[in-house]
Length: 315
Image (cartoon, one colour):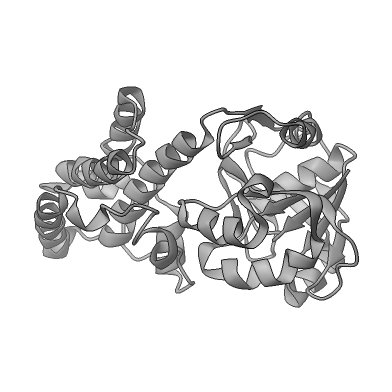
């Protein structure tokens, strides 16, 4: 079974490299600049979370747009939401009647795009958890151990032969893989977490510890979380109490270094995914959510204190 990984950044590169190391037939669809970099250096996984007992360099099979000659059986889509439209155009020739597409994107709106193009039965839901980023050399820095996880599932919750075949290929490759019969609910839970941490750290330009350390800062994260939970519940996917409790602990921890990939993108002037997945996350009731005024007041109060001598250095 052939696997096409669209994008070889911190997430797609990590999972694709692990699959290649496990003997799967993996090809990466990348941009010309990334292709030159990978041909020169290889695809490397480094950092404190990298497995010291595993080979950390892969010489990947690479193609660029226009070079796909036959359908893959699995497409792992790992691009930013802002690049989704172009990515779909680039990999569409690699999708055949038996291909399954597994998106790694955060949010929900990308499902509409993919369903309209390839049909809902060909598009699985996907949730990945991994702490990685690219360094200046293009290597994948794995921040934490244990390794990442990947959960897939049919959007309608059914178990099909194609879903099982995809799982068989994606499991046993050095990261945790699983099937969920409620993948849309899992995706909404991740959206709530990512939207909360992303909004908090982007708006305040600091880590969680920076923010909770100023007057009013400890209340801001829970206010944003409440709004995100209201959106998810309005869409029909209430967030479980244990998930809310876990996220609350993450966003109120004193001295925490936690930030978000989106805040790093904003600080470094790179395109951020917020316009694509943060504005209308597949929810028709979004404009009527009731927490916005409370959140806005908390943001203004916390920002005022940060500006009065507490603002962390730009990152």
